[in-house]
Length: 464
Image (cartoon, rainbow, N blue to C red):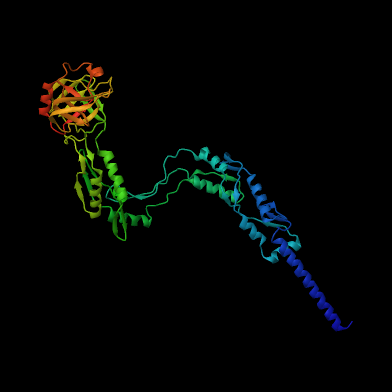
């Protein structure tokens, strides 16, 4: 064999060897990109010959077979069983399969054991985990101090920054994150120290943004709007103003829905119409009377318009609210009945007229028939108006009509009023139970005449 032939033969051998090598490498690449090589241990679990999906299933089962134990100073204080988690490891398993080719070829040819660790990141908590952690006594212990963020005090115009408070209330989410992190690292025992899971303030008094917010509040919520109510004044706090005002591009905007809500709150707080009132009854002593049409009533529509205008102007103002109704007596704060009123005692069938706290007249009466369902309504009312020579018309319980002329008509609520009843010979006693009126307060003509002469529209009428 000539030298040239030897060279050609050697070249052919090299080519054949390279061809075989490339073919084998290609096969290794094709296999190892789909299956884990022999002797591949992932997180201590043998995943040899498995696809990524099979490895995930195996690892998930292996991880979820563990109980998670919480200890404190060596004693077990909690246990989580049946983890039943799903894990976010698909990408990590693919990264293992897609390692550089030279590494896969090396491990394939050398049969070397491969140990790989990946984080078993929990994708979704199980309901069992949530239920078990919610029931843990050490997480449910009563705290002594609750953690609070620092804030700007908007209850007054000093705009002070109130320092944050570090409490000892447990942050459940923080604890659960610690558990999940431990599980992802393959650690199934957690040493519990309560202070490590205290709720942390999110805002601190030294934060620059909080200081900037204080200046923003001082610039925009320093307006003084004071209401002069019947019993006291109320000045809107910066917090009230904040709820109704926004500032965009240095322009003051009024949130009208918030203003409506605030005015409604004012009405609920300060209206006295229909509220329970303490009243000293002539025969019964101190009682409580609820209901009726008497008292202060804020006109919410007009007050809304007035407050919106005040807020837009931005100027300090002190005024009374816009009322649709005020009581006869306005000098006694919450006691808006005063010492001038008519008292009607249904149980005792008696009426008194008080002026300056003294009885001017008293009279037996007959109120609405109980037997026929015409009971006189109870509550605190007021004289709507008064008129002479009126015919009272209506229907009886049997459907027939009636027409009763009276000399003195003094209505206090809808069609209910006080009037003379010349057709009656007797008043008082138990007449009202079976032979009472249609709901009005019947009086002897002489008493009705005096009452008519003594009272004017708006006069309080207390029915109990």
